[in-house]
Length: 192
Length: 192
Image: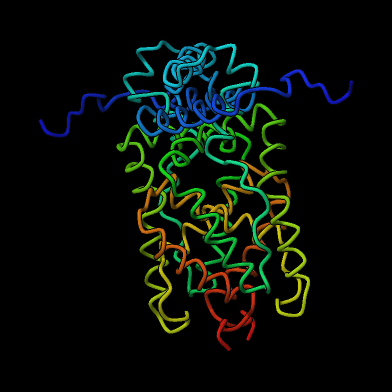
């Protein structure tokens, strides 16, 4: 039976939810380093094996806790809306207290475990790089823009502002970044 | 005597250099996590106390190893040259193999140890934020640009591209980022 996975088809989704909730709470309370599988299991009231049946490592668990599967995002109607959507979405994603705590640890893990990088990249980056690339190749954008550079710039600006400079004004930062990048992408004032 | 510091005025600079060289080599060979004070001391041929007399923690040592004091940079003659200098300098700084390994660990430490953040920020960010802020307030830039956003964007883009996407083409990335941000800052083609 090819559909029968090692993790089993009948696992209890309430356990997943309790573990992910516990991980998010612990990240904020005690930080990434101290948020061990043991601490998460104790907080969620589940066993260590119940966790290891679901996630191959602490980093994979934390990655799912801070970057949940939310399904496909709404497709933006044009380049402007697309860039704004990516900027707002990325800042929301990196702006939560638990993601700020988790990112340095996940970045360290991704350098050791390329499977984690590929999993996160496929889920978070790749669809956006494709969608943004289509719009950047169209008439609305200046020619020659690299979607990788644009996405590194949006994600990196959010990462630096949230995880290093640790700013609180997400809306103000989003507006300022939109202003800078929409001009850079369009080559003119967005309202023109 | 107020000039007599705990670390003493007569320490041997050859020991500092050997320790910092050892730290950089180990970061590339075994990663941030395994680069312990013990491993650095053994590699450099110095004692643990010799290291702790010089640096309060592993993170402070690593920070100095990957972000050495290079003195004041040349002042750029205009806004364009300033932005280009900051972009090229930041990409060079984050592009080395040892800085790519060190950044996630230093980011995690900076969240625990605000003294480390302040020390690095004062040395690396503050002078550039001031210089860039002066130029962005001048006639050459579009009005209303926030130097914090511009610097978060440059540093963050370099951080994401080097430490997460792990790209190798530093010159190509610098050119692409310059194109995007100079347009965004000037509101027009830089050559006009």
